[in-house]
Length: 430
Image (cartoon, rainbow, N blue to C red; front, side, top):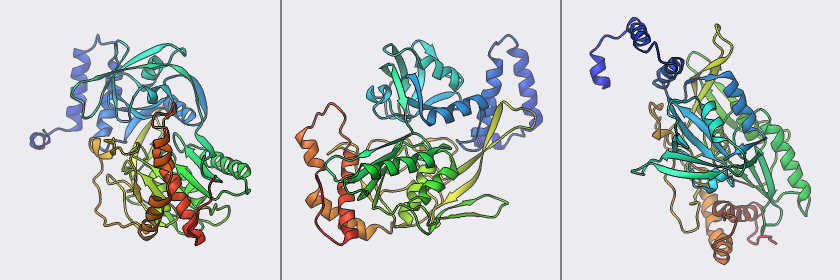
């Protein structure tokens, strides 16, 4: 198709004439305005999949919902790709997650309504409803020959962007999850949660921390930088390169740094700002990464307020970012130091990543080797001997609450990392 169009002269004047022609032919079409919005989105997504136009109200709603919020619905983060509504991430433990909805699913129908071409806010309003009622989603899933019908019972959804607790079976090991996105309050909420975890420990100090970035789709760049800085005393965090501007080099500062041994959980749903944090901690040999290859989005978008309107934004990709050692994870993602499937004895799931999108920015070749390679080999050998994740799973293979194998394997690796950093071979557990 593109080869054929290369031979045709098509200018802005031709585009204007096409629009005029369509207006005449579709003058009775009530939804013509939405066709114009879809055309604008389609034009921008030919540049790359992350450029778009978005209503200001929808953007502000998404920011509020990514932070703590409460509503009645199914518990999933949705996004729009051209005329399609896609599942960016089902929230763990919520009805959508329990019913089998997956990241990357394309929603075709809500109950009997064909929602292709609908605005995201309209789709969300139809999916939400009183708790206890049921909504039926017809979805298209990559790798499935036919569409799937998923019935989900709505519930009262309380979303906390930062979740923390101590890990059972592992004395004074903390768990902290940045659940949805990097929003304006993320750094402050994480600081509060970490201090609370410290107070809950027997010793008054965390022996180690598991930082969960699985299914965190990214968000504000400055929050990603600040959160990486919380765990680094020195070293580069990220470099942002924008055409026509000087490179922005962001480095760590020592005040307020948390020094405990660190494991970071990642998967295909970890994108953008999550990948900035993960690659910064890996490149600086500050943390071991556990899970699956990340999403692979190494581009930076900026919201532009059109001078002629104040009720929508134009979102454009303006820069690429590079990790501390100069690699870009565009398309290739961040590879964990330990690849661990979600289920004990299972296989890695087919993830939805940057390479599944249309018009993605090309990857830039790099030959990267994690500086954690030597430590990871020692830790893996230790965990194979002393790890308890498989034993816990074997003792109760069908628990009422889904067993988080990646988390518990991460805890095994963290115990061994704690011992390695202390120069010992014996772990402390209760």
